[in-house]
Image (cartoon, rainbow, N blue to C red; front, side, top):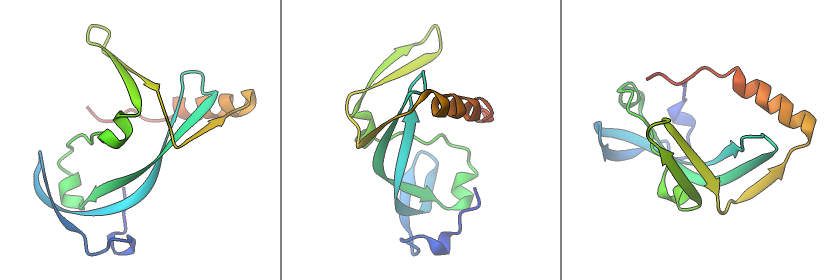
Length: 117
């Protein structure tokens, strides 16, 4: 991702243990934004994230969405269809989009590369 670790607010970092072992990580405030299926609305959450040092990130372990966000969503999982659907129950911000902006967002999303398996 090209993170400049020395520019982070928590530049000293701290030890973090997880599924991939121990590594140095950096806590930062962030805003995560989702759109609904129609792209008519954006939903935002203010969160704190831990950014793992580069060598830990190279392990290609999947990141997990934290309970601070998950507790504010309803999740439906269909194994056979390989589909997870989240329904927003609360958010820090909701932004309605007009049709032009919704179409522009949809076009951008369709251009995104899928994550590696």
